[in-house]
Image (tube, rainbow, N blue to C red; front, side):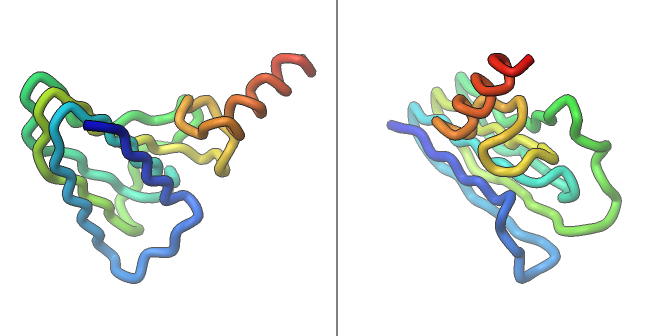
Length: 111
């Protein structure tokens, strides 16, 4: 019963394939990865969903490079993977917390 956010944009993976297992009840999990990584997001969601979202500027899914797989199961919850080329605190995804909010507000004021 809660939320989890895992931002891997500044991470260096030690293996070509990484698996993240998520299990929860009444929860939301957001996983943010660079757009140069391949992602696979599937699991069992009862009254919820597993999905991959891309920032509008994200490139198509690459054929090479690291692979991040998200597996598991949630009840009344959502698991979302976000692919974005934006650095931490920037970009159009509303998952960067206060740093992202401040950056979006600054861009609106400037332009």
